[in-house]
Structure formats: C-alpha cells, structure tokens
Image 1: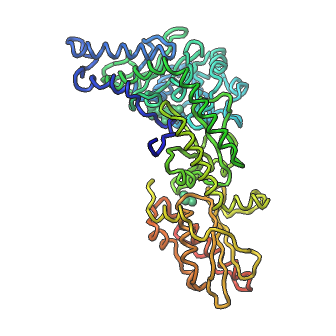
Image 2: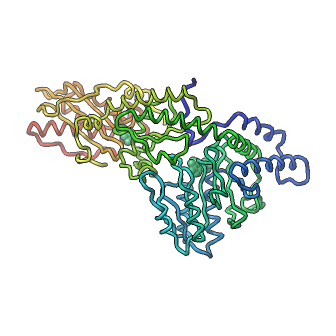
Length: 403
Length: 137
Ligand SMILES: Cc1ncc(COP(=O)(O)O)c(C=O)c1O
Ligand code: FES
C-alpha cells in the first residue's frame, strides 16, 4: 500500500493506464489537425475524434452529433448558460438554478444577471435535494432554462432529474444539468432523463484534464446555443478552436471503460464506501451530510462534531481528502453547500469529504478508517468544545467573542 | 498548504494540553474565538504569590496553526511573570512557527487568549483588567 492514500476522487481522478495508452500515439505520431481535410494526417485525427465522439455519446444515450467537445465542465457550464440566454432571450430572461450548484454555474448566472437575466436560486432541503413544488412555483412565462446539477460534488446527492426535466418541459423551459460528478459513475441517459443540455468532464472519470463536453439536444426540441468564442466554427459552430485530439481520444476511451465497467465498479465502491461510513459513524457525534439514499456510490461527507476540519486533515496526513472548512483569513466562510443544508457553521467546519475511486482498495479503506478514528480522537482530546460537551455545557448558550 | 516543521511538531506532540481548576483564585482562564469561525482557544495559567506563572494549559478547536500557536504560548508562559507574559506579541509566535500570512489570525487568537487569561486572573484578584490593546489583526 502506497501512502498517502488518495480519497479525493471528486476533485479529480487519476487517469486509467488504458486511457493513457490510447492517447499516446496522438501526441507525436498521429498529430494531425482534425480539421485538415486534404491529407492523411487530418483524416486520421478526424477518424479518432469521430470514434471518441461515438463513445462519449453512447455512454449517455446521445447521438454523436449532439456532443460538443470543450475544455472541461467549467467551459460547458458557461457555454450552456450564456449560450442559451443569448439564443433565447427574446423568449424570456428567467433562469432557475439552485444554491448548491458548482461555482461555474453560480458565477455564470451572476454574470447573466448583469446582462439582464433574472435568476432564481432555489434553496435545498436539509438532505440537499431541491423541493419540486418550489421549482414549479418558481417557473414563470419568462422562464427559459432550469439548471440543476445531477450529482453534487461535495455531498454526492443525486437530484431527481427526471421529475425536474418533466416540470421544466411542462412549462416550456429547457433543462440543463451539470452532470460532471455523475457521468461514468451512475447510469445517465439524456433521453430517459429528459435532458436538453448537459455538461461533463473527462478528468472526473479517469480521463485527462482539460477536456469535457456539452451535450446539446438536436431533436424534440432542437436546442441551440450561441457560441461564446469566435473563430473557425468548429463543433457545429458552437465551439471554435482546434480540437484537442489526444484529450478527446482519452475522453472517448474513458467513456468506453466507464460504460463497460460502471455497474460493477459502482457496486464495489458503494460497499467500500458503506464500510468506511459505518465504521466512522461508530464515533460519537459524527453525522453524514446529505441524503444517503439518493447519493453517488463513491462519496461520503461526514461531520465530526467538536473538531475542526482543517486541523483534522492535518492529523490524517496520510489520507488525501478534502474539508468543508475554510478558516483562513482569505475566507472565513465554511462550505456554502454544507451551510445551505442548514448545517450550523461549526458542523460545516467539522466536515470531511471522502471520495473513493476505481483504484481504491479495501486495504486502503481499512487504513483510512483507522487513521480517521485516531485523528478524531486526538483532536477531541485537544478540543475545549469536546470537553464542554462532555461536561454537559450547552455550547449555544455561551457568548462567543466572534471576530 | 505546507506547514513548517515547528508547527507539525507542536501539532503532533502538543505541550501542556489539559485543564486547570477554573474556580481556583490563582487560576486565570481565557476562552476566545467562536465555533462558527472554526476556532476556539482556551488557555489557562496558574500564578504563584510572586506573580510568576507556574503552570499553563490549553485546549484548542481549530486548524493546525491555531493548535501549534496555543501549544507554543503555554511553553512560553511557564516561568514568566505576569508582566512579562503581557508582552508576548502574536508576531513573535508568527516568527517562531514561520506562519504564512493567511495563518496570522491563528497567532492573534493565541495572543488574545493570553491576555484574556491574565485579565481573568487580575479580576479574580481585585485588579483592574488591562486595556485591550489592538493586536495585529
Ligand atoms: C459539479 C462540477 N461542475 C464543474 C466542475 C468543473 O469541471 P472542470 O474542472 O472540468 O472545469 C466540477 C469540478 O470541479 C464539478 O464538480
Ligand atoms: S484558526 Fe482559523 S485558520 Fe487557523
């Protein structure tokens, strides 16, 4: 077993060696520009891109013509939101999204507000899911787009996308989903789920960084987005720029592997995740954040009350995890996702996200359990709050000197 | 963020973790910070008849730098007179632990905790609390 152990697979995943092998020839041997129509170098590259496009499309139940390659989910999110707003602004200016979205979605919405969009940020329930009635109530005749993520990156909860898309369509709005954390991990099907636009990214599914896709529906209805970058008119005019052929080849291979192996992998990972979670819940005053039934198979976000996340991560130095705590002078705010579940700030500061992946072993999970328990106990021995809790003092009744 | 060796040392082997009897007249207790901010520090001193700090203990909820700052503070406090202890400046802690700029507030918290403990001791013993001097926030 090699240390440190990587349990941050929601941030990024290691590339699968099979993906790397597929990519390598496209750096120096088959290096052509996929848009070069008049020689073999171009044709070889174009063929590889076509094959990858098919693989990407197949994983999500799309037609290959509906896949626009981008530089990643951030770009796809921006293209979807800004592109739809620009294309459909004569129909209306209202967009509905939710407070737990990734910054790429939230900040693109903020940008659109400056350009005259009206954006509704739906709250989430304490389990991290949106309330469908609230969604329906928020829709007006000006609503052009509902943008709700598929799986959340911090707590892993899966939104009821089928129901959401049905509500959007009933009122004539399009449905966009950021499925970066879900594609390749659980079955995602653009037809069955009623998705009109969808963002996803290769590096979250054992592919390379810097390449992703936007799915744009072509039939029932035909959806269009205004390009956000001007240039040679690649990708059906929606995204100009010479295609990242090695990246796209890797993305295609990653999608193919996910399609073939996802079902088994999800079973294996959810068993390991449950083992980790159940063992850690044996610790007093520890809580899982977010809905545990509608959740990605490889994620567990757990708060250990009375210890601070950043300090805890330091004690778990052989584990690469991430924390919802951000107590630095740059940002005293803990995770906005955890706070929007209604978690008190101190619980949000006490949270750790464990993200398992394809290469996580049972031995690593056993080690992670032991290290985490040791670290939590070490820090509780140091924690004045833990001592007060044990003495039965109500921490909410103390007048803290906030600073 | 990479931590300095000294921070790691104090964090892994914190000195003087514990609790003194806060009801004793010669014990001063400082509790600063707030759970919402992600940091709470409790620092206690025990003072003898010559105004010398004979014992110091801490417990801290916070990041590694906050834990190290308070651990270091207890080490420095022991053996100092109250007058000397008041002079401990958060920038001394920053320097000793090589804290980066984003972690300066962790050391400020330790200085605040020292001052709060001293004031608690002073008030218990019929003295005026010291003016809260603005530290390097
Ligand atoms: C939900 C979600 N959306 C978007 C992104 C951004 O993806 P990318 O790194 O491909 O731009 C991420 C990754 O951090 C994510 O988790
Ligand atoms: S106590 Fe806030 S970052 Fe150290």
